[in-house]
Amino acid sequence: MTIIANILISIVALLHIYILILEMFLWTKPIGMKAFRMNKERAESTAVLAANQGLYNGFLAAGLIWSLLSPETFSFQLSLFFLGCVVIAALYGAYSVGKKILLIQGVPAILALIATVIAHY
Image (tube, rainbow, N blue to C red; front, side):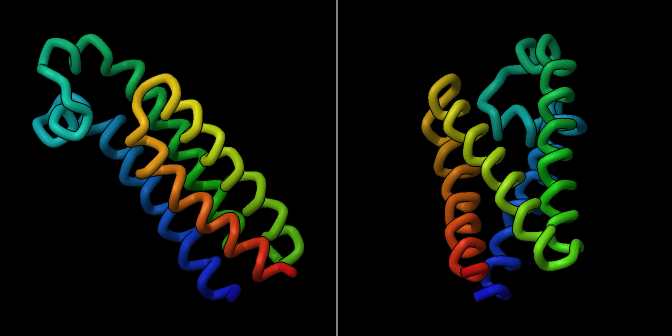
């Protein structure tokens, strides 16, 4: 079960690296505007805010990667903390922006969290 938990944590980390790239570097490009359903004007006016969001997504990814590389006991604590942060961010995003965020970010993090707890106990 530990392998499954680590694979799910890796998927969540990779997803947040992808979001970092979209928000920090591709926000005003066609792929970024399509992903977030924005026109050029809106993308340009919100680019600095998006880059800030991207940076935070990068911190989440870094924490999850840290949890994968840490000793087993500390790894469990880090995993719980950073997956919990992702779930909370997804819940707030679903409330404030759109329910799609819960599906894209929340569900993988919840599955990883469940697998991590089962693997630990």
